[in-house]
Length: 448
Image (cartoon, rainbow, N blue to C red; front, side, top):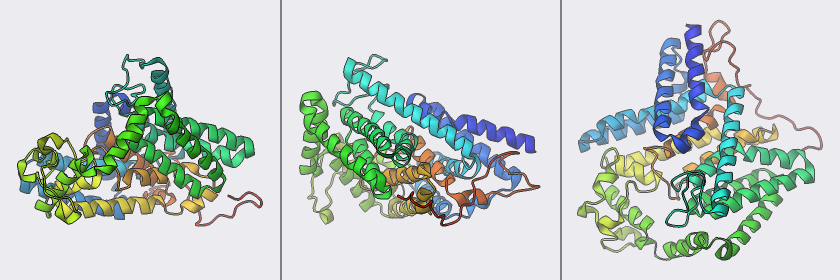
């Protein structure tokens, strides 16, 4: 049994480590990896009777959310199989948290993989900006966004999701250990990321990066001057974009201002209104799994939201439709009604509460990796933003990888594993996260 467990875990680790690369170039294999890891973890739990991970708040919220979506799909008469299979994502999070990533060595390897992919994305974006085309022969997207080393406008979100856990810990380490020289190098790295994101010309990834930098500045005092200088440089890059990158200026500034001034008639406003009308018409059970996709063109939902000051109107009619409402919380509401929205909010709150548990102590112990994973969870779960759907890849992979990785770094996660005969159930020789004390004194003269 020990031998079989060891091989199952090795296979799971071998599948998880390449995930950042798969989420760039192989979306179907990435989905297969998540499902396979969930199945292997379920087999591990059955073999070892290791069900301690179920006694967590986020698991309870996720279980209730899944049950609500399955029930809503049954009542809607479609998507029942997909709704039942949705539970695999939550099992995948638990597998990362309590089986695969409690091992510090595995986390270090995964962090290097994320960092390497972030560097690859930056290099690909600059190649496309300077040469006009990337290595695949693609130019900019129709709206002016840089594709980087990809064939679709996904470089911005991918760079945020890889740079935060893969490169930002290095930035924090440099600012803390190397004095003025380290802060200068950290500033250069941050400036390079911000300027690259400006050139990519995707609004939400840029705002997410700035939000993450702001949180870092608040939590790491030695990084505040660096963050401030980088934000000023980023503003300068936007100001110069009419000369250096006119398409980026049009999308980041002109298009953004136009959308904010007439939000109800913007593409995002139309989606928000359409989703709001659906939830208003079906408040208890929504429209079932992925119901927004099929119901969006229905004229029954071509209405305004008077209770939000949006007058009656078609607001784009079928032209204003998309495959999803571009917001995680609205997506849950259209699938399972208001209860699903509340349960998803509870799930997000439980994940954030656990990921941030003792982060101040972790910062004092110089664990920037854990800090940045907690920041990543805030960035991806922030409710007031436009997002893609996490029912498909790559969004599902980036989101649930970040959650599971962040939860695995919480010291108490390692204590949820049962230990038999002095051997970890993750396999002989597997390392455990140390159960750090709540407070650890800093060396004199070396404080943030």
